[in-house]
Image (cartoon, rainbow, N blue to C red; front, top):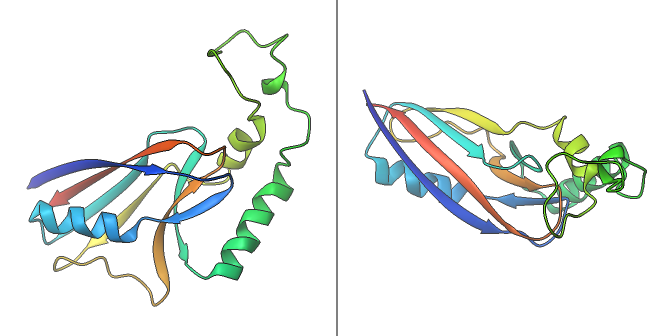
Length: 147
């Protein structure tokens, strides 16, 4: 059994934002030389998720609106009260309680089958990094395991 891993960065523009990363993942699979096994796609962030869904512009708009309705960025969050919060504070901290709450509903990673060098996607399936916070650089880790 072999393993191969590689990371790449994505510059996001806004939150929520669905960014199709399928082509980057497929290039890493090809570079790995592994034909059969599993592919793990992992976000290194607590406010950015990895999902498999359809890349259709109106659906993406619907999903972005859905996330904003579930955890409204304008609502009050204890996490955003810097006068009370004393844990994990950084210089220039932003108010992002909503993006952490949205992430509760989405996975940090996806594990996909690899068969004969291909992920057997359904007709419309694509891999997305989902930015839940604000524009920034994000890192995605891809690990290919198999033979």
